Length: 142
DNA sequence: GCCAACGTTGGC
DNA sequence: GCCAACGTTGGC
Image 1 (cartoon, protein in one colour):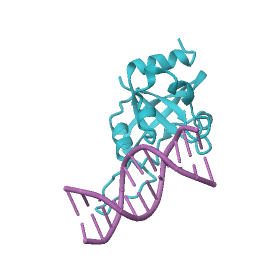
Image 2 (tube, chains in turn green, purple, orange):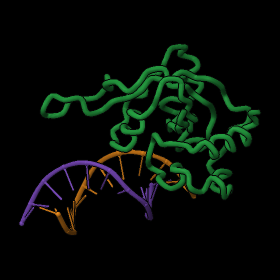
Image 3 (tube, chains in turn green, cyan, yellow):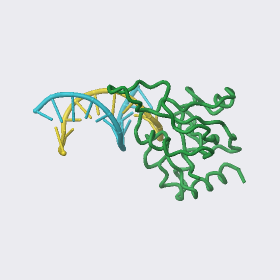
């Protein structure tokens, strides 16, 4: 099982928004090949951190992948009429007892290699098992 | 609001 | 195929 991190601007879609909707959220709008490829690699049941970019700049919750990559309903086809942009669906799992801020992540040597830090513009990125476990502990989870 | 990083586009 | 110009993301 792989772990992931997905960014959202909370004024567009916050973790609470996803919870309030009560239905799986189609993670549409990604227009970056690396991010798309990461979504294609996701398996059902895998978990992702939900990160608030721009406002807050912190990991606030965990979501679960409930639909494999499928065509992004908001995307245009390319000139050949092919699907280029895809997305997964997620559902909320839990809100972190203590959100983990970007500042704290940056100040933690064990997390210095995270894609969140190294590739700051990548909106869907992998998280290593060790990073996941540490972040969960920092967030106040078992 | 600014700007660095970086991905994409298009001229050559 | 190179690279300058441009657009976007996201931290500051």
